[in-house]
Image (tube, rainbow, N blue to C red; front, side):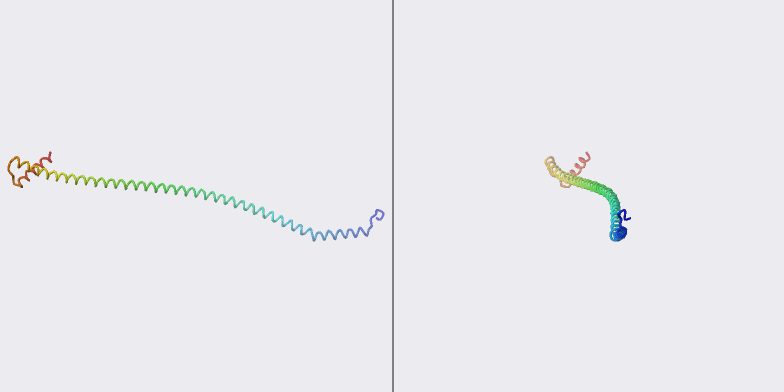
Length: 163
């Protein structure tokens, strides 16, 4: 082999050196590089799993938010309906109270009018009686006793009331 320019001693030492270097690189560099690549692959997979889980949670939270929004709208509409009912009831109560007060006032006014009318009638009767006495004294020229005059006036008033 020497004719080819290959020295057998160098070739064997080169093969041994190469094998030792390959084993040494395998132990020192290849295993840690593989372990580092496996760890990186696991981190990437974990990151993807976490991202997928976060995406699912976000979707669930969005659905929950939508459900709560629908619920809040429904509660808002119920509150508005209750407020409308309460205002309508209050309006009706106020109207009823006003009607009741006006009816009471009308009744009181009617009673007052009746009382005033009776008072006026009594006063008018008194004045008519006095006027009748005065007229009868002047017409007859003499005074009747008061009892007889009162009887005549009462008869006269009864006749006028009947008319």
